[in-house]
Image 1 (cartoon, one colour):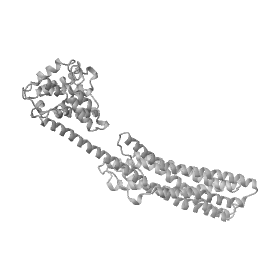
Image 2: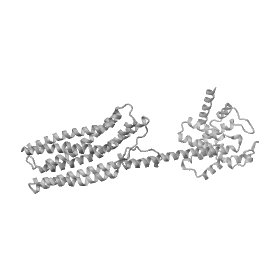
Image 3: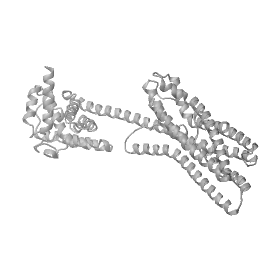
Image 4: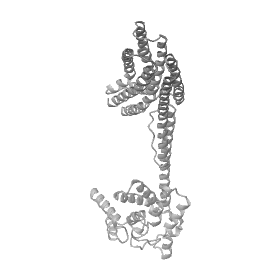
Length: 497
């Protein structure tokens, strides 16, 4: 019930604002500043207006309860049906238009008709000293005031319906109905809004001025009093035109700002859809924007899957050259990810590390088979050729022109054979001068090399490999990451036993 109560409070606030500006502001000013009355006549007219306003309010309340009924049915029900939610959604979208109907009918039947009848009766009894034709002019003025009131509330109500539409959509999703759909006949186009409001803003002040002039000229006593009166009326007209124009501008500005914010988010790499509580052309525009965002997300997801497949394919193709090292790149990637997550690295960085590890030996493509696949011990010259594979790997990947987001994978490929004490290759970097990915991958690569079978030896037991890593901690490998890996592996051994 909370959203409905908030909605009704805002509708009531809008009604009071519109009534104050139109009925009590313009209407009262028109009557009491245009015509001259005695104190007794003013009191009588106020009494007539009070009775008429009470009738008008009663009729408006009756119509309002009819309009709000679909929303009441939804929020009073513990399990609203899809039909009830759809009706409430459509009613909320149409509420600004329903507001115009709610105001214009009661204004005519509840205000103009009773006040005209009571005024005519007062004139016939001699209680009011004014010609009967002024009643017709007053009715015409009442219609203008009603139109002004309706226009003000029309735009104010649009601002209120936005939050209710979002609440109804969220409620529909929570009950498993999905998003609610708006029918074409419920849409009030931006063209209609601007055409109606522009005509009223342009024509209303002129009609009001002409009407007031017609009444005032019958009462005019001096030229000076006429100019005093006309200046006051012109000020009121100017204020009204400005107020209505600002309402129209605010109604258009909000969705435009939402679109601008959405575009800015896309430029910054954030793909977020925009809430769409609108029911004019902006609804289609924002709907199209959201479809575009979803399309970009789908494309990025598909590209990411394709990219991951390509990285895995490259690693498998590389490992296929040597059956004794099959799966090496995948295992090094797995061990590297374990270390990175144990070190609480950001997930984006973990994913880049995984890609780097999958391609860490890609440079071996440039090594001759008689050297790379040699079963015996390598000569110094042959080992020097093997040590070139990190540089060759970076050279190969540089030819691909990796996007900026994938550039961080290159240091891991190039520096995974550096030693923490500076005795590694290809550049002999030491300590923290070795890039982060290189330090992590060096541990994973060494562990898999020690525990995997090779043509000239069997893979050593896990405990022995861990002991070697422990001995080389702080000299051959980064002490912090090595300890994390040791703790992980020993914890797994303990859990398995």
